[in-house]
Length: 397
Image 1 (tube, helix red, strand yellow):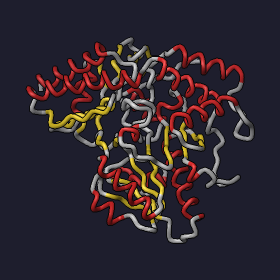
Image 2 (cartoon, rainbow, N blue to C red):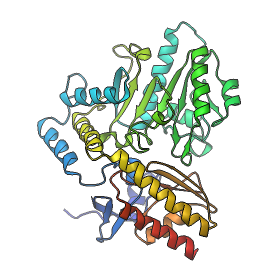
Image 3 (cartoon, rainbow, N blue to C red):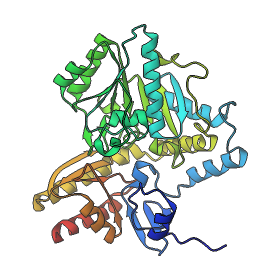
Image 4 (tube, one colour):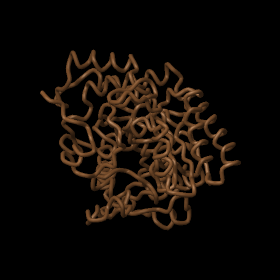
């Protein structure tokens, strides 16, 4: 059989045009490196948009996947399966919460959380308690409920009408928070660190007031940990830095070790909100993905990768701060573990292209922010190669 060429031309013929793919056909990965079909090695400072926490080729992850695949790839949630039970127990241990629901992706976890919030609110007896709020500049996904919470024109134009009874609170604006939440509020969704929004952390003062208002108005706090969770910020959940005390937590991206897997974790407050048939999924909690997820979490702890995220992340920030002294193009640097944003004067996609020419993969977000989301396994020496590349680009600009 003739192998189909993996080219721009083939892509245009085969797919809907919804991805701005990089001009690289990758064949495999090694550690923190991706290898193209020409044999060129690329330092991956994106890690599958925050998915590949262990980098590429971790033997423990590969063993967990192959061992489980040899036993059972799929049976559906009509049955009880050991990998699901073990991963659910681990997530409850790490979070201190009460119940788990598994799905396949971050946006599915958000959709499930929206449904749980509204079902919980309906059970309160207040028929007006339907409003679901999020923070400005957030990103929660592209399905209808998640897109309604995101509500940026670039994602929602042409797809209206959006989900009713949704709205936005200005990011870190306590006065707007106080004006927006009420007895009609069912839930407020937060990202402790906004990823697509440019790597910005919610303030402790905002979180403290949010918790006070939760007591007053009786709504749920939902923590979107899809990008910032699973150890990336130096703690397993990024909301732990702020003592946010959420009622629901959404996890995805690295959770399945590269396989499709997400989770919604709920407190005792919502433990009984769902009954048979209220919500479900055919593939969510796939046993192979759950086995991979358990191996990924065990590796994070075994290799002290949360500590590595903090120490290497701190090193990158300090080196970037030195770089900013000599390069006026750098306007601001924000770093939470290995979740790093560098605001620059021009569109960040320029630096993505220049870094790609030098075989380093970085990402652009929020128009003028260079985003770094390397594997949690990255060493200081590997990080320095990225820093040297950025320094060279700023110098020659």
